[in-house]
Image 1 (cartoon, rainbow, N blue to C red):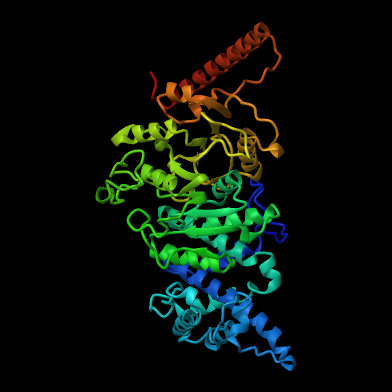
Image 2: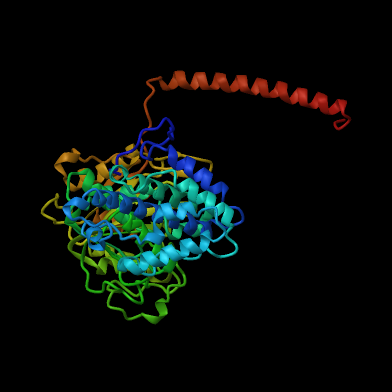
Amino acid sequence: MAAKKKKSGKKRASNGNSATLGFESTLWQAADKLRNNLDAAEYKHVVLGLIFLKYISDAFEEKHAELAAQRADGADPEDKDEYQAVNIFWVPKEARWPHLQASAKQPTIGRLIDDAMEAIEKENGSLKGVLPKNFARPALDKRQLGELIDLIGTIGLGDAENRSKDILGRVYEYFLSQFASAEGKKGGQFYTPRCVVQVLVEMLAPYKGRVFDPCCGSGGMFVQSEKFVEAHGGRIGDISVYGQESNPTTWRLAKMNLAIRGIDVNLGPEHANSFHRDLHKDLKADFVIANPPFNDSDWGGDRIRDDVRWKYGAPPTGNANFAWVEHFIHHLAPNGIAGLVLANGSMSSQQSGEGEIRKRIIEDDLVDCMVALPGQLFYSTQIPVCLWFIARSKKNGHFRDRTGQTLFIDARKLGSMIDRTHRELTGEDVARIAGTYHAWRGDKDAGKYEDIPGFCKSAMAEETEHHHFVLTPGRYVGAEKAEDDSEPFEEKMLRLASELNEQFVESAKLEAAIRINLERLGHVR
């Protein structure tokens, strides 16, 4: 999370890794008040579409003013090539924010926005079929739409200063997370909690090479990968980004989310199912990073039983977990490494051949690390989840040779509650998990690795076999060491017995008082 954060007095005290919240939360609260009767799933596209439009218009207007000031030198502010040369979207006159905001109070504002979106798509091929174009529908209150335009118009999003601060990225990510929360289970289709993505990215450390997510949602994995490279002094051009997404609505969200950040990514020409239409069939990635749908029972596995990807066995047709695992392995380069989120059942299930597939993957020495995460991290499910890290080769010359070994990390006790139902891993939690992994792999900057009872254990293949190829970290890390309070055992027992006797006496007094009151009410004879 390398982007600079604008200071504000408003913070989540419990979380060390969230952005400092100021105008993002204020903007969300104001926008949410205007939702009226629209479901969050519908309103999401209204708000995020307008934010996108404001962003590209701001960037365009700044460049337009710069060119207008250079007219004497032959610059033409209406020359489309001037904008495309610096990766700024060309915005036609009828789609520019000042024009739309001037008409915000008109009953025709919905149609004007739809026309603006169509005009932008026509002029910018990479956005074709991406932008929402249903602002004119009767269900969307035009007075409230106008108020929303005025609200978003108060924030500069696309000018150079705010681009450097990633103002738009902060607003977009914050709104994605809020919509995920509002939508409940459906929200998980497009948003993986930031702290979970951070753990994956910090552990994989994608400095250079090809990064692939075949179920990319709104593109959060790619955003964090690029931020990781920036934060560690690398060059964004050193990584190539590939993705795929089957949900057409989510695919468009990803295109918008990545476009506003200037991330060059190959998401294929359209949405497509990774199992049945692999758009990157020949790709061998250096890093695979993904959060596939949990326990998907309707993935169409009966139609592809003999696929080349099922090297370790045909996955059960009633659960896609191991279909995803084998798909990721298939797309890994010889020294590639994958980090993925799966339901906890994947670590121990013996149903429908899953145990045999897991056994073969373990016997092939591909499982590098397993991390058990705390519950309540996801907006979309209360199912406990874990992280799998799969390495094609544990003899990678950059790290210590860990052939025949697997690192187990039990992080279930980490994290802090941010509200009644949601937990987040703090920055310290993320650093502890990732630091433990890098120390184990032999990164000289991460310090020396040591097993910590109750938290981490480096296990040999024989131990995994002893546990019948079950990968649940709790089986390996053991119990946390109890702190020695230095009080002699005999003294402690005398003290505890005395305290217990006092509590028995107090209990008897309370029981007597209750009986007296019941007798007075005539309920005890």
